[in-house]
Image (cartoon, rainbow, N blue to C red; front, side, top):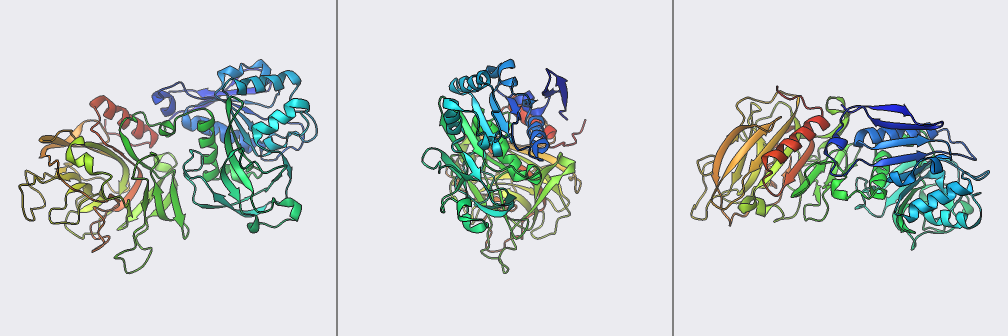
Length: 534
């Protein structure tokens, strides 16, 4: 486990650095982000300021960032701001007097103009007394000026952009209890609005609203740098909200210039096609029932896996359940599948992996006792075609919880329905069953080529537990990818599905090399506290 320790730097400063090699630092292609959490104040003192500080430091621990916390405005001149990737004005306020001296104002301005990243949280938008040209510049950096608000209450937020690293985990509607500021002007048109406030969802006087269009979280390129502002952040409780935590995490990554594909900390990104992470992109309804799971890799057809009601006598019965903060895997979330599934509706997105490109998949998972439907077919993913030979690739459990995988890519010369297993369609299977309610990393790899390639299965290590050759058919035609069962089985949904949990599922559109595979195994077993053998 990576740990942080506070180290004395100067009066009013505390820097948090890794005490032992952490996952983010170990695998980052670039040096870890360096973040200044700035809380110098000259006005209203929020009771939630300690929680704001703790959140930023907690994110540093999680991601391997170096976080320097300061309540002293002199940190802007005494520290070398050029050594920081992001400066966070972290729920500080300046409604009574200036927060910064002129030299400190100039240091912040120069930092931004030289490409620095700035994140403003809550009353970072209420520094009213800086004065002169800098006041105008600073309000441009924020995007507007907070002026008033009604009492703290619950309201509805509308997520306008669900592709940004800070908001892609959020549902379309997000209900939050917080303080709803009105701004001096509407920043829309000058900034990229990510989240807006539904003014009909909260009470207040006319001057506590903005006439219907009420941006609340936004970002922009500004005067040479990157700026992100969220007006959320008044209450203590919001700093413990997992969705808000991910918003701040994504905002730091974006303002720090971290490529979205690198944001998860995955050490191997070349060929990464699918990343389903139970900590991000999960949309729930009716409590914790999952209606959709968003791919964290942007830019391909497999963008979203959704609930599937067709064929089920009870609508919604096929939805898995979100299980949060699982202690056994380091506080990460999982999805619980009990004869349920989520489906990507693209018919052809995964075809090339079976027809010559090869693939590598990783599943962080736990198994329960299986309820026997079709003997020894309890699938946790697959894209088999609803046709005679069920072309596609899949991962499954036998009834005794031995894990197995296969690639059904029959040569075109083979006609008619074929047996479940044969030399041309091998079952690659673990020698021993997985223990119930223990978490494992299960990995499958298919070689690249258009003749005969290897299928390999791995459990908790980069050494295969089984390997078999399989012939490749360049004209094979698999179908839609399902998580939780082997195909889009509308004729008998759930019959060939597994019972268990998935915390993370990654799929590469190529076979990873042995060194890359070892990197990924180390990353995922450490990230999810997987008990390895030996």
